Image 1 (cartoon, rainbow, N blue to C red):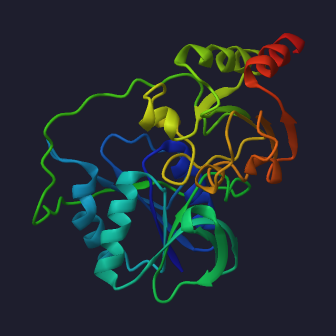
Image 2: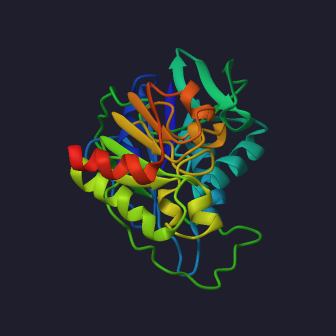
Length: 295
């Protein structure tokens, strides 16, 4: 069996290639642009150099050509916005479906979430299996391979995305994918200045600061890179502290694989109290400073 891996981040490359190795005899990684590829993760690294002005989405036709040449049986995809576009176009080319948000595998049976994480189901892929897989699913697997590099010829798309402008995103704080502890802020924070309480708790715990969607797209208090939820980050830290977050499934799908989940909310009926391991009913303006002082 042969597996194809589509990923952008180094950590995701290592984990997905490790997972691919558990089911396939040959692992082929498709690497895009200047992505840093870890050592010894795949048998072959099929590298796609992006022409000037091209975006990763435009590499879909090159990926399709690579798939047709490799004839892989299964495809593992990092669930970033760019990779989802590429995976969707590959699936359309194959007349297949993408099984999204996979959280576990039992042989060829995948458990995935649907309706924004409201439900879960087990299913087998029909034909070529294409999965988007979040961090932590293959955390125990070990990658291996010679990393033989092959430069792929660029296949220009019929209708390319027009890049009008671009701006580098300034990475802030701890890498949430690597953080053992994550503090997540929600609507319970009344003002941007109040986030200082969460920052101080993070400093004491050596944690990374994340948030629910409204704090990135509603009031623009935090960068979109730290939004946790169904269309944002999918994390699996050892400890997750949800502060002022109600617990809607659209958010919980991004953190429900945390080893231990703590919740702080002044509403005793908040849905998050039915999903957390430990809950504290209280105002974050009182609880967070007290908690930080006690550490």
